[in-house]
Amino acid sequence: MFCEQCGSILRPKEKGGKKILFCSCGFTKSPEGESVTLTENVESGKKIEVIEKIETHPKIKVKCEKCGHNVAYYWTQQTRGADEPETRFFKCAKCNYTWREYA
Image 1 (tube, rainbow, N blue to C red):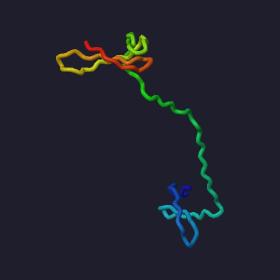
Image 2: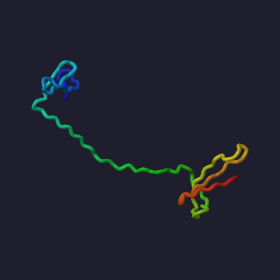
Image 3: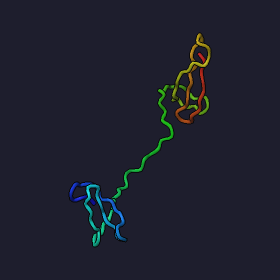
């Protein structure tokens, strides 16, 4: 409930064994005979689908050593000295087997 004079929220307090609503501006109101019911309508929305991991690497046509599938993700990483070429890693798009190729 709001104050009729200044529009602030009325706060409850006990005065003489009765509850009254008061405002910082001095306005008071007795809530006798009034009942207030708070309701909230909650709509159930769509369920959120959780994806464990999204593969962001590019795909390449290469044969998987384990299952024989012809598509794999690939990436390169420097695993040896700076004067050595990078190592290429592959991950099968079907069985998730990972292997490497040294250049």
